[in-house]
Image 1 (tube, rainbow, N blue to C red):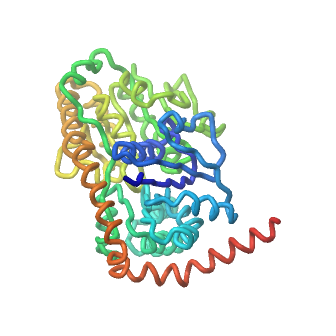
Image 2 (tube, helix red, strand yellow):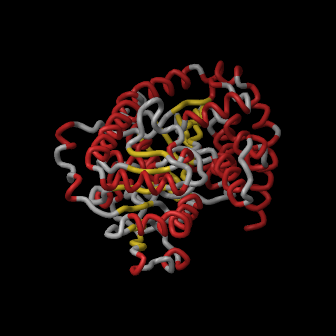
Image 3 (cartoon, rainbow, N blue to C red):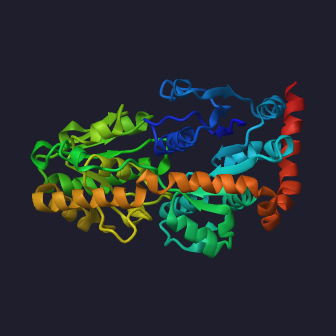
Length: 411
């Protein structure tokens, strides 16, 4: 029987301890491993000390070069059945090469989140404007939507983003696939091992500082939330964790105010299980937030905003509170921090959210079956999404010939 092959093309090498994006990528890789795929992971980025050691999982690692026909030689020899692009920028760079060299390969885009949605919300917050859907119609949106339309299937992590794509931009549901975080079930035996309320103390925030919504949230905590909270919780400290903390982050450290910058957490979940409450007054963003998945997996209640909790809980109760007003945010944080009964109820809500909305067995088998059926019916699928072929024929020519020109220039 012919061995099934999948090629992942990463914007970066996955760093599961640094970001939710890296953690998400590892979940996708493990899903293909469980279905006995031969996996190759390729990236033009440099590795870091925190890059996952993929070879230990039996995955072939391949360094590739931007704007080089060496990629054509590599993929022609590999002949993957499926190619997964890590974010739309990667599809722009390599999508035309994959289509040209391996026309029968299923092209799958993992969006991570909708970048144009996050950027539009960021601009609204920066300009202190009320957000409207008119703000979504940007050049970034044109690029990202074109990548979605060119791909055979795009993986969407948020139900809210599915709704925006289908209702606002009229993207066919046939080329979109909802695939949330893929989590292990929280069992009663795991719950009894969690540290109880009385053994936990202090508050935390965690998030990769390269990601602008996280850096903005830390600033918001420093200036708007913590000045109120530290007076309401005179014995508590706020600890800030995150990968790639620069000097602008480190200079916010202030022991007198009990606002402490801790830097990278080697394991978000091991770190988080010692704290009583996660505080994350996120003002803009997209997708779903890995920090809340980590919190629920460690029995740590949280307080966040409507944007922070977007698309995460469905019709279930949040594992804490969702508040947008700064003063109310602080009041609810104190309530969650000091009231044992409310705290345990919030913890139970988190367990329910994980087990009902993110438990991986609910999604993995159906996802792989869907890919297999799509692969068999690829010609029919592409005829029904003929705009994909139009875009490949026309708009990608500019990317193609720019890349070829750069390659010649570099010789």
